[in-house]
Amino acid sequence: MTLDISKVAIIGAGPAGLASIYELTHTNKDGTSTVGSSKSSNPKFTKIVAFEQKDKAGGIWAPSLNETDVPVPPQEILDTEKYNDPDVIHPQLKIPSGVENASYENPFVEQSDQLYNDKLEWKRSGVYADLFTNIPSRFEDFEQMHGAGATMESEFSDD
Picture 1 (cartoon, rainbow, N blue to C red):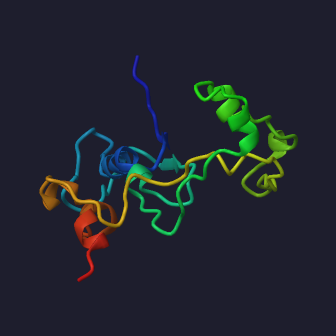
Picture 2: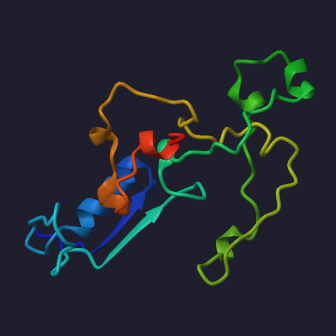
């Protein structure tokens, strides 16, 4: 049995998701790859869609330098003394009504009125202003993805 898959969904637009997008856009119908050169002139996939929960691609490597650290949990949570109970620290959110009717043309938007919804959710990345690694820059480079050749080092240098 041969599957003829022409549409692909990628969950997450972090480093692995971006690499997947790059690879899939360079895959020919015959299974060969054009990685390192131009995009495929005879592409295998007609539609490649990536889903990302953050407002920008990059995953753990997408900088969020302008955001503050997660605040201390509200006193009401601290008073429970159940610091190791994830259901207390981060209560499960109810699925809002109206989600089932959402579409691309009619997106679902909810104004958060929950007391702890945003206060206890860590949304930052693992990248911070003075971060350095012992990995050579050429191995951290995603120049194929954006054409600029920016690395973490050049992205945050003061030069």
